[in-house]
Image (cartoon, rainbow, N blue to C red; front, side):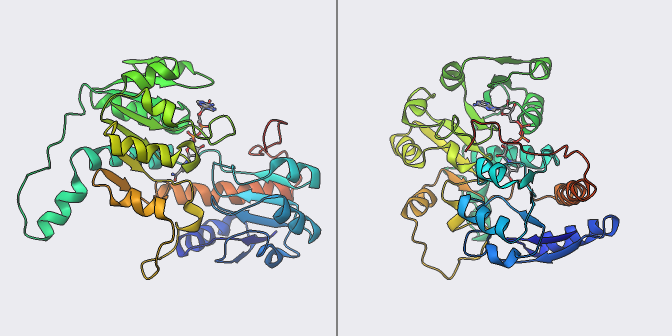
Length: 336
Ligand code: NAD
């Protein structure tokens, strides 16, 4: 099938061209973000492939549908930028990649924990500067900590297993608890306020939905331990950034590690090093010594890219053959 890819980088092209030898779809790669202004590029493409910061709102979907698009293939797990209701009204099917190496994201979350705790970002820069002082680099043993895992699905489970290996006890919170979490050992589900109250480290692994938007707001932060470490590799909108900045300033939040940011679609996935960044909130966050930000790279392992490409092209092949879409994101009535 003819597929128009948006927001593509060199690594997308490489992984999709390699995987496509098994599918032989006709792939066209656009670098621009998908939105209502760029949607015209997909005219006459029955399939559009989008990534996490592409915007498939009602205006974009209307434009795509009127020019022949019938399938929106997300090369991501999250689908929070798609207006599923409008897609359903227009008869555009939406498919995604529900699972691709949960290890990639979980291991990145653990990387943020260690980077923050042992201040590896400061240590790296110091040594490069021939400054071998250890002042200000004191960390703490992860062993024995209580870790709060919000969202115990595929990624949250792997994160929990790794942290259990460090000798931590784990508190889980999930709207749909699963028995495997408590089977890891040293794990138990608790209500969210108890998780926030007792955890030394809180890591977010639930999807961004209307009910999880700003899950971490001023009230949630007030329930956390003094000096807590907060990790978000899930979606920026889970966190009320202004409230988190307040928490960092007051000392309530001792460490913040994020791979996602609420307004990231204006910044991430592009080189802006020669640009004056206009987002004051982001710049303020960056200025704190106990904050580490990565630019939505948790998924970026070779293994994950191969999995994403193969599942996406297979989803498109299922659609082409009129087979059931096992990875369809159907409109449930409660979503946008
Ligand atoms: P998953 O669907 O396997 O797990 C999500 C878990 O969250 C499920 O157990 C679900 O029951 C739970 N959940 C749903 N609603 C909830 C609520 N209101 N409160 C608490 N828990 C709730 O998904 P996954 O593969 O583990 O991915 C988790 C998230 O990670 C994705 O939604 C995506 O946003 C994010 N992600 C980020 C990257 C990255 O590169 N940073 C890559 C992939 C996925």
